[in-house]
Length: 133
View 1: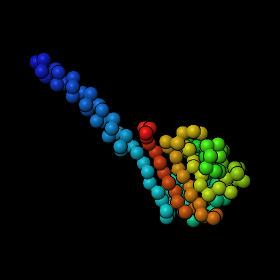
View 2: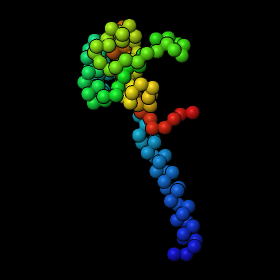
View 3: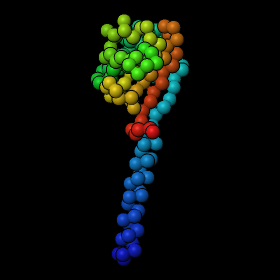
View 4: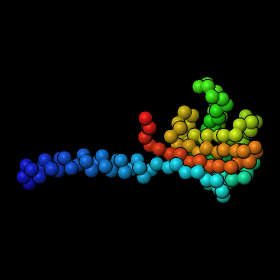
C-alpha cells in the first residue's frame, strides 16, 4: 500500500461514515397523517372515550408514554398525564392530544390525536433522531 492509497483510505472512511449517518437520519424520519381508517391502535371517527380506552393498549407497547396537552398559547399553558383511560376527565375538554412515546418532554417521538367535537379526525405520527434548528 502506497502512502497515497493510505491517505485516500483515511479520507474516504470519515466521508462514508458521515454519509451513512445522514442516510440513517433521513431514512428514520417519520412525518405522516392518517385521516381515514386506523393507525397505531386508534381509529378515525372514534369518540374521545374510545380513544382513551385505546391508550391502555398503546401504553403496553410504550410504557413511558404520556399525553401532553396544550391548554393555551402561553409557555406554561400545558400539562402531561399518564397515557391511560383514567385520565379521560382531564383530556376530554381538549381537542388535541400529543402522546409522547419516550416520556414527558420528549417531543421527537410522538403521536398526535386531533379531535373535532367528540370525534377523532386525524392521527399524526412524528419521529426524528435529530434536533431541528
